[in-house]
Length: 235
Ligand SMILES: Nc1ncnc2c1ncn2[C@@H]1O[C@H](COP(=O)(O)OP(=O)(O)OP(=O)(O)O)[C@@H](O)[C@H]1O
Ligand SMILES: [Mg+2]
Image: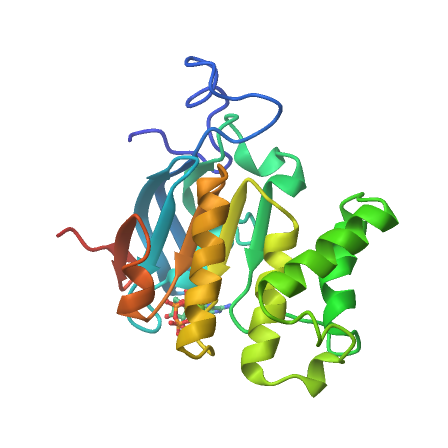
C-alpha cells in the first residue's frame, strides 16, 4: 500500500519476479481505489489482489459497490485515487484481449442473434472468421444454448439471455474474466453449469472475479470479499 496514483505505478508490481510473460497479467492488484460519482463515493480505498488460477467472489448488499469495482478493474470507470495494476505496472494499457467483462444486465445487442452477440467481440479482437465461429459455437454449447444460437436476443428467456452473455465473455478466453452477477437469473442446474465454467477458466490460468448476491454461488469461489458501502469488510 502507499502507492497512490491515477494510472498505476509502472514497475511497482511486475518485473521483479519475472512473472509477466507474453503480455499476460501476473495478477490483478487493486490498491486503495476510490471511485466517486459526483457526491457519491461508490468505492473507498478498496484493495484486492488476485493471482492466475484464482476464482474470487465479491459480495455485498445492493449499492455496496460491486459493479463499480468490476468496472474499475475493467478500466471503464475512472479512479478518483488509488491504482489498478494488471501485472505490467499500468494494467489498463494491456492488450484489451486480456480482460473480458460479463456485465450486470448482460449487455447483449437485441438486434443480433445470440450467436452473433458471441461472435462479434471475437471478430473485433482479431480472430479469423473460422476460429471465431468455432469459439462462438463451442461457448454457446458450453452454456446449453447450442440449439438457440439463431434466436434473436428478444426471443430468449431472461436466463437464456444471461447464459448468452456468459458465453460471450467465456469465448474470449481472457486472462482476466470479470463477471457481474452472472448467475442471478439462472435455475439451480444452469447456475452450477456457469459456476463450473468459471471454475474451469480459473483452473486454466485465468483470474476470475465474480460478483454475486447468492451465498451458494459465492461458496464455489476460492475466497469471498465482502463490500459494504464501498469498503471491504474485514472479517
Ligand atoms: N453512474 C452512476 N452515477 C451515480 N451514482 C452511481 C452510478 N453508478 C452507481 N452509482 C452509485 O454508486 C453506488 C454503488 O453502485 P454499484 O452499482 O457499484 O453497486 P452494486 O453493489 O453493484 O449494487 P447491485 O447489487 O444493486 O448491483 C450506489 O450508491 C449507486 O447508487
Ligand atoms: Mg451491481
